Image 1: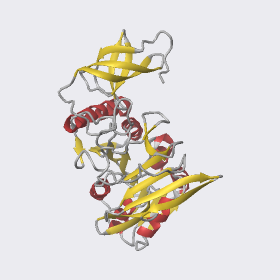
Image 2: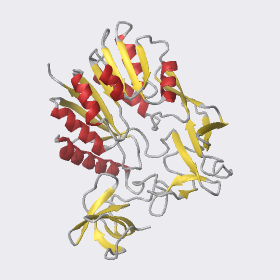
Image 3: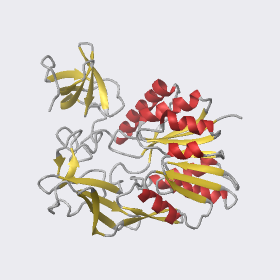
Length: 400
């Protein structure tokens, strides 16, 4: 429901301007900034104001009066106003969507990182059917669905444009326990796995509905058995592309010490450990016990790789040996000052930093630059097509 005060108009007609971080376009009404979702730059739209934040409003386009030439028929049948919150750029031509995302990343890097970037967003493949893992929530009626944008309400039509054919087949017809979650993963062998999790008292109980509790994931010759409930790169091509990039940028060599921070199932630790050999050492750190177990199993043939289940901040504070190279792939909130300060204090001179949120990525780049690191390269991938999200990767070095 709109959170508007008595003087906020319910609906407006306006022309949208530049894209903003988070999937909206900036518009103005009598000098006030309005962030409009489901619109493209330069469109004349009728909007519904959804929230009054004092100095600015949030709104959503409910009618497009003068469309952008980049607007297309939605590539996701369940997204949009009053639909699911899954694909907030499903109505944009994919090439135009990448250009919009590039503009947002450049703006965030300039504002928050003090860094000028003018690159392109690189596609990873087709804009639809790319996702390998999802989580569905179950409503009080026992039906599984996707959440509406910023809402507890569910859309029980499961035909999201991100999903490959058959990924949710049959899941919309079953009566599931209310408040349960359905985790679905399609492994690199094509096998579908469905795991239901539900609270029983203070415990979360997982039940395998189809397939197994783990999905097979492959990158090059190495295989992982990753729990269906754990994190793995959601785009089917991302793990391979990112692994190759880490190998190229890290320049790992025999005898080096490398850190894989926020290492998850050990995707990057594998690349680093294979390169540094038994005379080197790789430390992979993640807070998830489930991910750490998958990493230990996948890296069992690499004795130079050590996997710790702990916070990155606590592990770094206890380190006495500096790494030659560090890879950081933090959650959406970024690494932030405390962790970056510890990396800097440890004297790491070559860094690869991932970020799936443009603003926190840009902020972290600014923190590194404040410590004297130089940005050698930045690449940005369209790892979440049909959405405003991107995956940013930076190579940073610090002179001796």
